[in-house]
Structure formats: C-alpha cells, structure tokens
Image 1 (cartoon, rainbow, N blue to C red):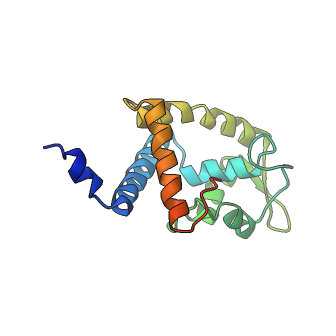
Image 2: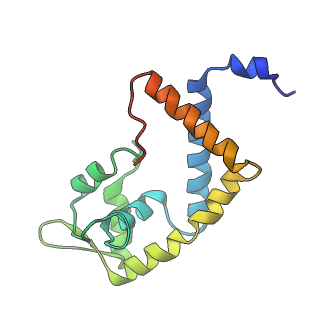
Length: 154
C-alpha cells in the first residue's frame, strides 16, 4: 500500500535520509565488489591521483588520507588494509616515510574503475526525473541549513 501525500508529509526526514543513505551506499559497494574493487580502494586511488582529486599527485600517509576522506569514509573502512591490497596489485607504492604513491598502472586502473560510475548512478536515478532530483537535493539542503549545518558537498 502506498502512503498518501499527507502521510508522507508526516514522515520523519531523518529516518528516510538514513534509509536512503544506507541503501545507496550498500548498492554502490555491491556493484563495485562485483567489478573487483571496493569503494575505499577507489577513493585511495582518486585521492592520490593528480588526474583526479589530488591537486599535485603527492604521496600521502594513511592518517593524511583518512583526514582527506573524513567527510565520506565510513567507520568500518580500513584504509590500511585496503591500501595493502592496492600495494599487492602494484597500483600503489610506499616510500621510506610511509607515504603511498599511485603508480602508472594504478592511475590506469583508477580511470578504468571511474568509467563504471555513470552506470551505477544511472541505476540509482532510474525513473527519477532530473528536476525532481534537483528539487529533492534543494529541499535536503534547506533542511540542513534550517538545523544550522553546512550544505557544502565535498
């Protein structure tokens, strides 16, 4: 049974945003796992690539990477263990100071993995009009503003 608009209007936004967050993250991570990588591995590559998030491609330590990813990393994400997998694959190297550096093959892998993002996004957005999506985000941003938090996406 579908809820009426009046019933939906009475629903708690915090509950539904939490349900949506968990469902979307779980779906995204499952899709990435089927493709042979994890979301934290992808983030490591992106944060170390001068062709992506890193402004200069300079190596970073695990604590520096955790800080850089603090707005989106999940508590269960173990960057040290994820980095070890990428080191074994030859996608990262580690220098004598413990900084991780992306390799050429790692950057090629990052670019390849990034090509899957549009298909994952399309599945999540399936059947949702772009205008409705934009309206939803504006409403959520307004709610965030209303409770005194920052709406700047990372």
